[in-house]
Structures are given as C-alpha cells and as structure tokens.
Image 1 (cartoon, one colour):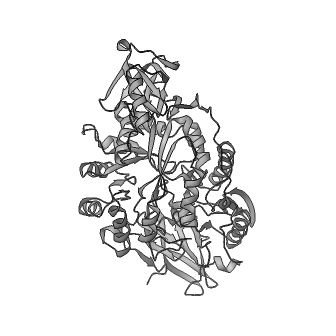
Image 2 (cartoon, rainbow, N blue to C red; image 1 turned 45 degrees about the vertical axis):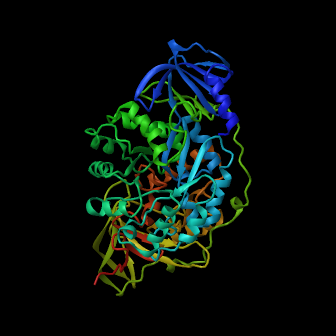
Image 3 (cartoon, rainbow, N blue to C red; image 1 turned 90 degrees about the horizontal axis):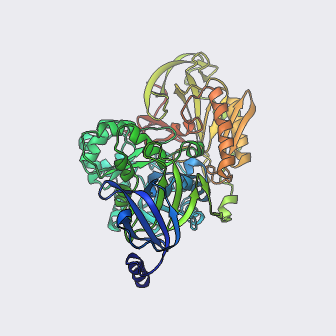
Length: 588
C-alpha cells in the first residue's frame, strides 16, 4: 500500500473521507479476539478502514451502505492446500466455482500439470489465473517426479529449476515434499531441493502420511512445516504438539476433519490447525460447498465455530506468512464473507478486495478466460500397441504360481499393502479369471521419449467387469488402466490417444464411456456446470462396473501414488513405498 492510499484510509477511519462501502448491522466474527459482536465495517478501495460497534458508530458515511441485517460477517475463507487439477477445472473455471462458496484465497500446488508439462505447466496455471478476482497463490512442486528413479514423468525438476521458479509472481514457497523417506534419510536430491527453498526463506509444505515418533521429528528438522496427509487423530495431536501445521483435509476421497477434530478436544485453540480440500470433485463444490463445507464438518465434529473459522482464515494466513488477509481489521484487504448462520455456513455474499463478487450462490461479475496455446497441445505420446503388450508373461507355461500383488485395505482406496497370492499360468501368461477380487493393472508411460509399460495384479479394486483407463493418475499422470481382458485395455489406449487424455471405459472390446481432459491429460476445457454432468455420467458407469469409491473417477489415480504406503505401481513396476524399491512380482 502506497503512502497516498494510507493517508486516504486514515481519513476514512476518522470520518473525514467517505467510505466506498459500509456493511452495517452485521454480527462480526473477530478471529483475533474470538468474539462475535454487532459492528459496521467501513471499506475504502481494496481495504478495510474501520470497524465500529453499531451502538458506538457516529460516522455513518459511505457511498454505498449495505444492511447485513444481523447476518454473520467473516473473513474470506482460505484453502490451505489444494490441487486445482483435481477438480479438472482450469484456474479460471475453478474460481467461478468456489467464489460463491466464500473461498477468496487458495494455496495451490500445481504438481499434477507440472509432472506432465514441467515449467510450462506451472506457468500456464499462473497465466490462466492472472486476472481472477480471488487470491490464487502457488507453491512450486518439489517432487517432479515424485520419487526419482521409481517413475518416469513428463518432466524432472532439480534444485536449480525450483530456485528459479520460486521467483515467479504469486509463488509462496515449495509444494508438498512427498518424498518423506528422502527427507528423513537425507537423500542428495531432497536435501538440495528443500535447501533451495530455505535459503530463500520461503514456506516448505510437508506430506507425512503415517509418519510419527522420531521419524516425524526428523522430517520436521529436515525442513517441511505442515502436513495435509494426516488421517489418524493421534498423529494429528502429535504434529500439532511438535509445532507442525496440520492442514485437516476433507477431499472427495479422503475425509479426515472429523477424526482430527476429535483428537484435539483437550487442546485450547491450536494456532497450527487449518482446513483444506486437497482434491475435490466439482460436483461436491457446487452441491455441498468448498471451505465452508470443511468448516461445517469441523463444527459438527465438535470444533467451536469461531475456531473453525479461524482455522480457515487467520491460521492459514499466518501459516503462509500472508500479510493483511485472514481477518477483518483496519488496513486489511476487504476479503469478506456474509454467512446465514454458524451451523450451515451458507454463503450469502462474497467480497474480494472490497468488491461484491458473488451473491446468493451466483457470481455477479464476469470472469474472462484467456486463450493460451498450451490448451491446444497434445500431451499424449503412446506408440501403437497390441493385446500382448497387456499380458503378463509367466515363468512357467501352465500351473499354479505365486505372485506379489498390491491389495487395497479400505474402500477409500489410498492405503495399500503387499500380498502374496496364488494364480494360474495358462499358455505362458498369468490368468486371474478364477478370482473375482483380482484385476490386471497397466501403467503406460504417455510422455515423450519413453515407451515403458509395467503390468501387475491388484486385489480389492472391485472392478467386476470391463476396464477403465485414466491419464489423471497421481503423480506422474501416465496412463493407468485397470482391466480384466487385454482387448479392453488396448481399446482404451486407442481412445485415450484420440481424445488427448482423460478417462475412458471399455467392455468386451467396445468403448462405453469417455471423459476428455484435453489440457495436459488432466484438465477439461469445459465450464463447471457442463463438467459436473460429464463427471456424474462417468461416475455412474464406474459404479455399475463395481467401483464403489466416494470418488470413482479418482480411484484409478491412487494406484500410481507411489508416496502413499505401502505398495503402489509406476511405469517401472510394483513399488515398495517405504523401501523405495521395485518389487519383482514373481515370488522366489
């Protein structure tokens, strides 16, 4: 804020200059004091000039006066960790979806598109979001690929690349350091990457699923200061006590806020608790909300409403060292939400930098989308394949044989374990037709200059019939196919190439559904209302095929998430996550 603007704000605060906007008769939620009281809020240009308790206000001077009529006035909501790509919306279309829900600031990690397009992918997200009426801050992906030597992505970032990108506009720091094993073991790669961020004194975001005890302390000492991968309440309490920010997550596939809140009931106002969505489908955003839904869930689980709002405003702003946002106070940006009550947290109005952006769940401003060349590029590079490319050759011609598989433990489909099972070898290939709990999985590298295909078997994915393939596949975003018959996998590969990436289903050699993601194979070019319908149709198809996940379209992507224990899959084969080794699927 320049000197002239400060002088004008002083004059507005003293009643010597007219405010641009006055919000009158609101129940103000003060996240500094933890109070709620009736107040008038004076706004000038982008900023809050004054807050005066209603009965003490003698100024009443403003160009526009809006009577809030005893509704609740809150700071605009902040999502402490989100991947925009997981909504499959462009940054502009994402803004259109979340602003009516009261989200005025997000901290996004674009590592999905970065794994496909590298630095150009990061720059695309920044360029597309440049003029949206909300704060879209970004972190530079730390793990591209997620674990070096265990998968091949479309790019590879080293410490020099990251150091340069940290100087890009609206970049706050280093994105989730998923290679927690590398940090704890002080691998050369992760040490250099984290050090590059720390030397610039920027934020280092963590990712520590299941890490506790001495290893958690070691991870924190290694540099990361937050974690959104906390699923167990006791782990949340330990992280809070050790000074780590716990970004409690409520995504479409991992719902952790309730268990985390339960574990913190004996704590008094932890300042390092925030709320995030991480990966949320656009239908959920439209129907149940965004961060306002996270607040609702937290309050229902027992968190005090003011604490829940603080966890999605001031706490997050302080986590990321964001100046003058996250609260309603003089000199702060006028990012403000008007709520109906502190039970449902329905958003009536959203203001960003003093301007009304959304009202009654609708945008009231036009948000233009730039036309960028990257949106027309084809990022799918797959050679012509045959059915035999999707058959696992056995070491014997016929008979029983033991193999190593990855097995899902829960319907949430993130945590997996290693298991040894017996299957048949028929005519020199693995046959799983006698076990309805098994499916084949293929990871087909779809990036330039790499033709890798890895095959394995997955248990408890529950794909009864047909096949599904997706280029939205954490984190490398290679083509992941779960199938029963090789002809189905082959047809999916052909269709994926035709639509420039996305999700495709097949049965008996015929294509039964397509959901195109033509931008880098992870983003749609459609507005949210159209995309919601397309995703709903695909989810219905996948549920009929047997995938009863909270987010069926996301389920295939978890197979390749080689930073979530215990066993996952990459284009190099079956991966032991903790040991960071490739597993030979044929047991000795």
